[in-house]
Length: 528
Image 1 (cartoon, rainbow, N blue to C red):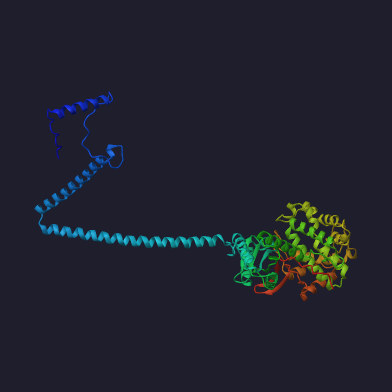
Image 2 (cartoon, rainbow, N blue to C red; image 1 turned 90 degrees about the vertical axis):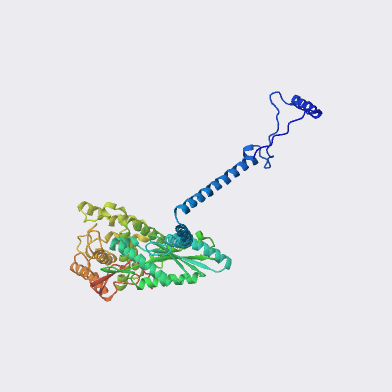
């Protein structure tokens, strides 16, 4: 479209007026700028100062797009025209139908793919939720026992305390500690120890309610959270656990029935506070008090005249021996329990029973001063090492004689490795010069040692140990004490109340078996 030229001006008066007006404009214009006629373009309507982006530029782009589209359509039309001239219309119609079918198939395929992607997306979300749930369960469970773990227990405890505070109902917790798990591992192997923990977990789950949370906090520590339960209900569960563990072996080893002992502490809301840490603290305190009481370390335990101070001293010494050598400590507990039963059978009176109990539980306290390399040696000792180990009666005597209430016990400790024929140590005492109580637990000490596993040998069966005692009666041991002990074992007194030693064999499938327990020996309170 061509632009119309403006009409030629006429040489008239109007022309003279226009010239005068232009002269006035030239005078007002800057000297470096030449005024000219305004371009014949529309005014910008978008407020842009750049002409390339304004309406003129937009019109140019639109013209270009329109031109491109027309060129494209013209090309398609030209192709169709060529095809129509070269090929018959029927072929073109077939091709069009084919293309239409392909297009329809593509549309259907897109829709199917969209549905498939939607299903896959939904399945992926479900799988993700399932995986998250499984991972949460794994993160909140103990791998060995499949109980809840520490993290879950403390989270549930906090949440349950919140609910209990709002609803004003009680909540109780039980803290449970397995006795002498290391001794089980040392005696029967770690697989037996793991089996004992798994069976204990099953027992606790069976005894607890479905709403209770049974958890393994780690190692030999367990806990039970009991919603809407007061102190009486928690104590009832603790008694039930003790009864089940006392009556049923936790694991059957090839040569022994393993019984498990546990210490239990009880705490709860509101009688011990409303803070999770406070409840756990008081439950732990109750647990350790229970542990000491089960070991016979409690006020007034060692006879009617026993004082709290005396019991405390014996408790500290027992704890020191336990830290120094757990196997020796458990051996002393077993000897003490059997010695008390034998003392009662042989007619010892109350003061003598008290001294016998103290001496039996502390008879190896001198081993605190023996080197670890000697105590823990996995092979037989050489002569030099035997000399060192033979010093422990004297070391124990020196340690105990400083306490007035332990002087009689100290004498028995000094004499517990003497022989009836005078060939023992450290003083070579013989016959009646050896304290009678010391002669009693000499026999029991030897019997327990023979029927216990050692790093360098397997334990003897009960009958084999009894034959060994009878063979050495009159030389190493007092014959009357040996006869009384063999008779007591035959009558079942060798398994006195509260004693769970690795000594009480019994007939069973595959031959003679023995009873082995990790529970501490209840030294049985004073005779009535």
